Length: 227
Picture 1 (cartoon, one colour):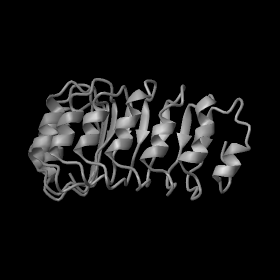
Picture 2 (tube, helix red, strand yellow):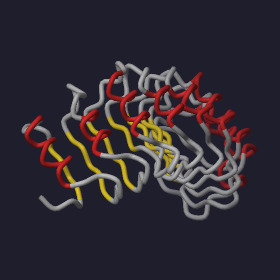
Picture 3 (tube, one colour):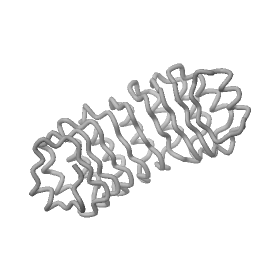
Picture 4 (cartoon, rainbow, N blue to C red):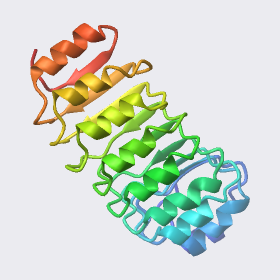
């Protein structure tokens, strides 16, 4: 279900019986007050991307949805680490995307580590550093991870990721200016990894890609590097 130009008033007057997927992306007039009506529904997939009125209080309400499995908060720039902490009560949440939420920090990663997520996208969350990546490395359920483009993430963060119990199958990263060939070598040691996508890593050379393909010929690698 995708309401057009959803508002709080529209939500309060809509019958959501039988609705399991709701896309309100871009709705500028949605806030915590309007989302209260969803708590008693069967909605499992919710997209609130680019809803400028969605803040920490709104996410606290969303976290109460009893069947929530997938949540998109991309470009919700009014949320902070407190919003991620609120999601700890969403025990069935498996998919979370918070792309370009600029106020999220390593504190959020501490919360995310405790969740039973399968897919997590942190693209554009520039406040996350090696410390946050190290926290995520301790998660035991995430199989699909998209890292933020951040100058604060270095080889050490990737080493920590490769040595933790996180069961990664797919890893995506772009514009990480502080990582080198050593990071790619470390990633190659993630035994569960099946797919790696990386581009615009200025400190990584083609030799790293060649070595990776020799080390893990079965690994599907997408890169902008020539070989």
